[in-house]
Amino acid sequence: MFEHLATFPALIYYSGTSHMKTMLAVFYLTDILLGFITNVQFFDHLPVGTTILRSIGSHLVFLCSAFIIACFGLMLFGYV
Image 1 (tube, one colour):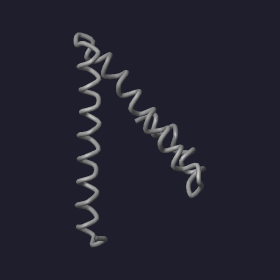
Image 2: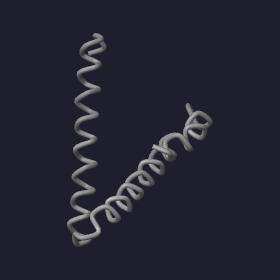
Image 3: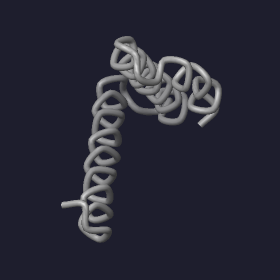
Image 4: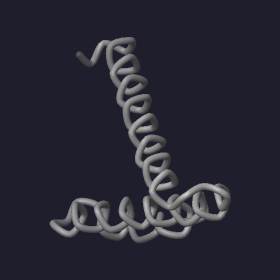
């Protein structure tokens, strides 16, 4: 969450420019890396391979649920 708050001014600055896609990719990769580091520390009793799989799984669950919520929101307000 701190990363999102810290990088918000950069997103506003690059909004509408050609660098926006690159900035979002960098921020998302940073988010994945920080999440992985957090999971390694939290699951210190598990092997690294298992931690990687759990990290990937948690990101997939998050992306799927965010996509489903966004779709329902768009349908609810009549944008689709």
